[in-house]
Amino acid sequence: MTILAVTQLELRRLFVRPLAWVLGALTLAELAWRFVLLLGSFLASQIKLAALPASPGYTDLVGVPLLSSMLTGGFLPFGLAELALIIVPLLTMSTIAGERSNSTLPLLFASGLPASRIVLGKYLAVLVWLLLWLALTLAMPLSLAHATHLDWGKLAAAVLGMALMLAALAAVGIACSTFASHPAIAAAASMMLVLALWIVNLGAQIAGIDNGVINWLALSTHLETLLRGLVASSDLLWFVLLIGLALALAIRRLASERERN
Amino acid sequence: MTSIKSDPTIPVLQLDQLSRRRAGRRAVHDLSLVLQRGQVLGLLGVNGAGKSTTLSMIAGALRPDSGGIKLNGADFLEQPELARQLIGWLPERAPLWPELTVSEHLEAHGHLRGLRGTALMQARAAIIERLELQPLTRRLAGVLSQGQRQRLGLACALLHRPALLVLDEPANALDPVQVAALRTLIRDQAAAGTAVILSTHLLAEVTAVCDRVAILHEGTLRHDGPVRSDDHAALERSFFEIAMNDRKAQAA
Image (cartoon, rainbow over all chains, first blue to last red):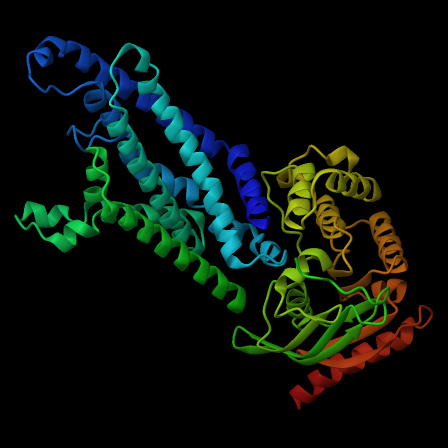
């Protein structure tokens, strides 16, 4: 499978560069700090929570907030979702733009690989790294699963939301990388785009407008539903559409580059 | 998997009225060529003659605007995946991933060309030995000298034993000993049945290793004929006539 050959090559390049290791180590350290803070706050409020009839548990106050600060408020320290807005563009910036600046892109074309396999192979490699990152983050709340009551359904929905968000950001990042001449430009464009997707409805909400279309466009709307434990097919479809659109654009751009060069 | 015909009577490479524009100018125009198994074709031309564009199209890195390319009788433009097994390409400056070692490069190229397991290990060991890359296997490509980079690029191009070897100025940055070794390697490849197309602007390179020479000028084929190793002067005369006559005509 040539897709897997590209994935293997991209993974190797990703893991021998210090960037991926540094990003992984720094973000996991920051998430561990967030986990300790959330756990401390959860333990401190145990007596208060016990008095409530349907009090939120470990999953609501530690597990899900570790993934995103969206439901808990207060951004710092960042949750995984907020970190992903910075990390994913940095990880994806070199996928195609790096090949272009290295002059190795024609080599991939000359291996008889269609643009779709190059893009999908690279996308899979980035996904592997991101899912590993998500798994290591999840290991923190799961390490206490034996000592507490986890709401597995709610956590699974939140993890699904995070996985879809990471997959969507990776697709957008790779699309930006195919359009940019230099990795740094790809990273900047990708960051701007994912930030815009994240907060597209914020201005309208501040202005008191609760427009359905603008809300539907925002990534945060769909992620929030999943983080609350609700799995709606419309939210899943939104992520699938975004991933499909971004990858289709990337493939089209790369194929036309082969034609034009 | 595409079936690859290996009938020795079918030309390995057939270019049919190949044309391509680049940066608004005619880079290659109406180029037709045929290359048989075991033949070494020298592609000569001054800078900007269209040699690299031609080789990029043959290698599958660039699509022609018009015309056809056949590899072992099959339409290469319809089946670009043929490049995977049939073509080995060394561009003018060997493109390498600076963060990967020499050994990792060979492995990655092997995977891209469909080699796996024992076949890959054997091919890698053979090419490392053939190109004397043993002391460099664990070195990062980013720290290699120009000559070493060129040797690694050549190793990647030869790894999967292609039917057609496309070399764009392969002697660049090589020392005289390495140039001699490269010539031997090209001749050995041809003796084993590989068709070789070699772009250069060094006439000595052509008379040393090529059976045939094609002279490109301003994107068009101006000469295509056999080369005699003892007739360097005749080749030089033809080359300068083509290059200088055009300049005179332009000046007039």
